[in-house]
Length: 298
Image 1 (cartoon, rainbow, N blue to C red):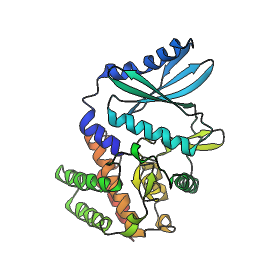
Image 2: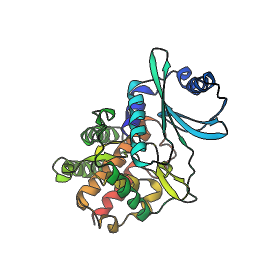
Image 3: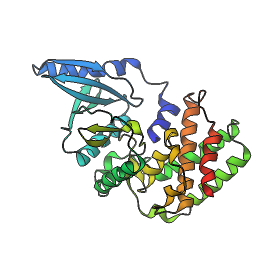
């Protein structure tokens, strides 16, 4: 989510389309210079990356590269490092090519498919536990930019909450109640255990290789506490069906902290929806979404 906040706040209007369009042909030229013929199929999606499919000698590869900014390149390098730790069967490749005066990095890996239906709550929790355990000792810290840390998320949320209130999206009551929960996050001892988290775990970011779930799109990975990804996953609209006291049963931080984190995440998601102007057709308002989590107090 941090990279999306930065993109929509700063870069969205500055990204030259020609830099996006030429990236696939750059990789294709690289293979052709080696006498290997390739075909390219542009894929949809990818706000912060350029994604396409590359067919090399009959094999289809999923390919991802970055927008023309150094920060986005570092985020892709981070993503490649994480894939290499988590999944040894995806045939991960990294290719660096000159692109004008810069270097463009490409990620190549096996194609994946989406599950026939979304994974349930218990399966997702188990999946998070599995990858969290593997990432506990993540050592390639140079590819995690300093701002990709929990403290920066807190700062962004404080500002976003005020803006949503000032723009009339939130009543004073909901603003004040949410702000009180944010204060809890400045004093909790949950921050003592910090590790690399996904940062944007949604159903769209869980794919399959055979019968094995694979978590994709690690460009938002940041330093936070182990339960962050699960709480983030719960804040998606379709996962509201899980809202009950049961979601706090295995909490390490306690119910108050978990509610505070969910409110923080929803505040930032609401702010993103506001700045990229995608909130107009929401079936629930920002205030209603926050109210649902506040109702978990009882």
